[in-house]
Image 1 (spheres, rainbow, N blue to C red):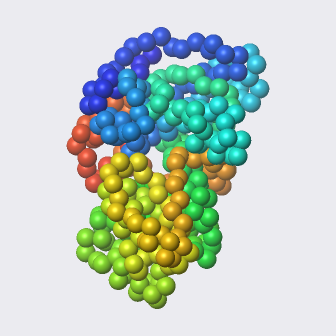
Image 2 (image 1 turned 180 degrees about the horizontal axis):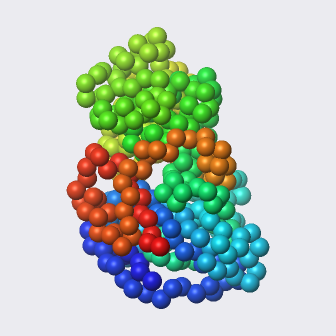
Image 3 (image 1 turned 120 degrees about the vertical axis):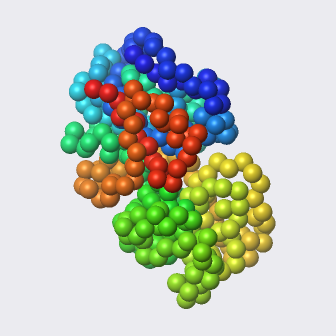
Length: 342
């Protein structure tokens, strides 16, 4: 089989290796069918992901077919279509015992801290795979993991139907949070620097859009909220200063919640007074936790608009195009999905 390995920042190889054998009775062999390309994959390739090690096979948005099962596997069978969880956890630490396994003290993340799915086959424990309906196209199934992130971060933010939500960044995750918030009945304001991204957000149900290059965010939010401010904000842009900008007077109302999703390592300019004078909650959110099955159920019930979330589909045999787009980013390429050759 073939696999892609990033040996060090900006260097990758296409390797031919044996198909892995099942060595644990509870493991399954997965034949990959599609894999989403996440912003964190860009960071791994460019050497800016603080959680990654090298050499590394990228890929944590993985879906495929069960090709073989270990002798003690009971949850799935050969031929099942599955989504693969991105985290491996110990199940025994404090975090795991309180339902926060995504920040397990021993967590390994597929495609970052351990090898991921940019290969034609790999093995995983049966507990890490979730059966998906066979009528979901592979190009759509690859979006289950990003939508699980949307489910997790909105849960972390205690999203309610009467919230006025502000999303900074109308990219892939911002668009997913938007749909998740609208499904809960919230009012959503979303901002970006790209008019095409904002037009797409309108199509996904955004109540208000703000182009931050052309409009004053604070003035627009004061206008929209009649001076009261936002109750729940998400930093889905994740650049230096993006988180601090959400604490600017006029954006958050007293007792509001701010959810941070990025791994930017540059210092922010947040001070205690920004948080404590209004008793705001600053909430971290990483990956997802117990959200695969609820997300798959929502996919089954067509709860989300998937059209346009992924914009660029690339054959695994043409993987060079993925790295080309990483080196030469374009506004038209909002999200890539790798489709494995039949």
